[in-house]
Image (cartoon, rainbow, N blue to C red):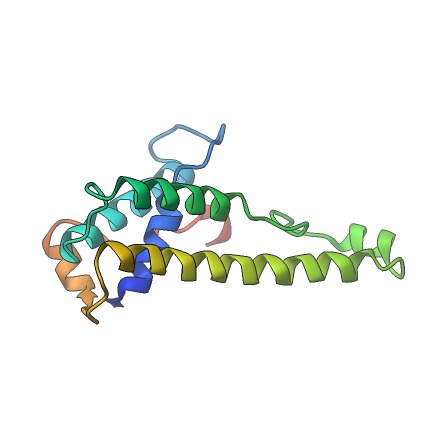
Length: 152
């Protein structure tokens, strides 16, 4: 896979810690996904030769953006099976509003990514460079996202 600066921006957003009381078992999906995201960000930063260490104001701004991105949700988030709910609210207009909120959530997530790209470009302009999976593997970063065993 080829990674662009937009992928670096997404890695920043995804690696931002989320306060959770999730499982702490090192073999849990939660911990494996968190580790994967942190390692992917570390590898992409290294290969893109990118750092915000000398850009405290941008780092502060990015922290706010990532916190906002990770908190962005919608009424359908986490819903695995909503059949009974759908039957209960059918015809009330509630599902249309919830669907509109989901669309707004998706647009907001895309705009967070756009903003993150702009912040990263302020620290180091994007010159079109690309990082490959092979380069990541060469520095010890596995870029294959772990799978949730509950969803195959």
